Length: 240
Image: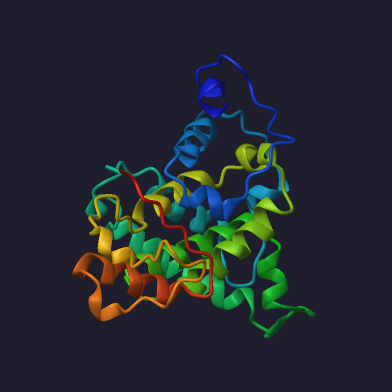
């Protein structure tokens, strides 16, 4: 449907269309790429979600937007990580780190906490958490739960409170940043596993635990990755 919308063949109703963020960012379908393309041509309507000239005691939202937009607009090649991890990314990530700290700050200014001041800009803070997730991904650390928590914040604060139409109408390049983040995820599309790696007993309804020492190097790498993610959701696809 999104491809047909981009081709101006069958417009989507973005006021009612829902977007489950975690499945969308994990799929190989180009959903975020299409939404990023739609956002570029979407008619802009000035709204409170733009945070334009919005006062904050220590954050200039217009300055932050300029830094974010500079990274979002950089050209890149999806399979090449080096085209995604640019100097502009590090600049935006550093700026975002300060916003995340202020997001939960209990310091008080003019009768309100800094956290309350920061929370006024829903999309600005959501984008700061996208950069937080991006920094964790490119760090290649085993921090699945931290990445999931950052993306859940984005889903609850942005996608849970605003329609896709409102997100597309905003100046913030939310979908371009999510698309870039999705391109950074690790994939094992060419993994080769020997049949014996599955260690299946077709005669038994209950399988014995896998013996890791008997796995091939490729299968052992997958097993360790699964153990890191447990007890979170894990999807393994076998293709012949």
